[in-house]
Image 1: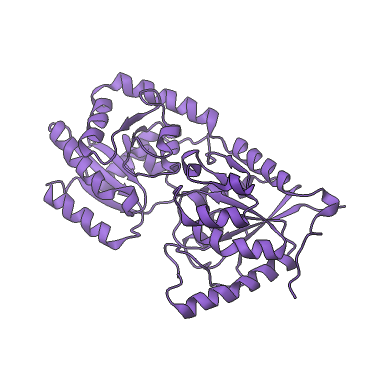
Image 2 (image 1 turned 60 degrees about the vertical axis):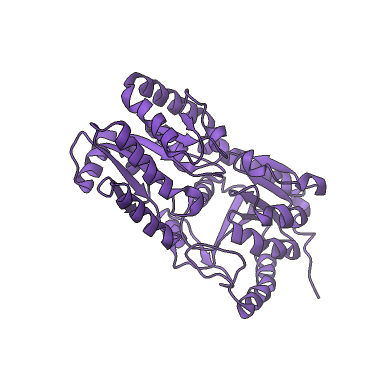
Length: 398
């Protein structure tokens, strides 16, 4: 009798992002009678390894630490010797996949797409390329059409530049999974955050959740806080910025902008916090300033937790938010326009309440973990030959 299908989930191991959290939630909910997850990490000492341990997910070190592509928080190839080691590691990975009889490689981040695509082909495994980033990613546009057996994206926006159909690569959009039963005592969470910030009980907290990279526009968030303070001078407002600093220059730029605009006391850098539900629930409004966002996790989590959302009208935000019904959309890179939308919510409590209630109901219906897992498991099943023929197509290079 054929056993469960082996699915390999490779991770670089660096800084945790939304893609890792989504993948963890999928792995936790897999039907173990049908699917056997094999989780491997190139750099297990990093944040991803800590996340997996915290979530009780077994994993092992990848057979080689060397990989292609950029992975924030871990090594990346910088010279010909490093690239040669990563290239040699391709055969190590292919042999690993053959030895472990891996049926499907499910890659979830850019560096892993590029690193595991060829080994999957040589090792006889199907490759499910789960695209969670920019539609203009070079790997998606040039490598996936050649080596992927299926491309899944987190939004229609993320697939907008993919021309894999011309090469016969099927595509699907499967929205990220969320715990629709999130339940946080908002009053208690707010009290803890205000105590940490050392601000009065009537302070309004606007949240920024995202790593400090250019696309997330952390400096723009500072401008939003400055504009909001100018629009509502009698309202005590603080901007709490949660996230890791990927680009150190941006943290310096945030501090300089806050000082230059006279809001240094209103902008607080909180660092990375996981899990983030308590901190999201503690905020009055989530401001999503990022552009090119494929499908932000914190946006949906905020909806589920009862935190109002204002996001820029770009990328996957447009698929997640029904403007004026489940949140507000504002012009891209326009701090004044974003502040206007936040002020609209803060000065109209009834509208804010209606939007929050509608958003929570909408998110629970569309973005549950069970639906996500069922959709991905159906894709796994569609990638595989009949049970009796599994692994017969394995290639054994001379």
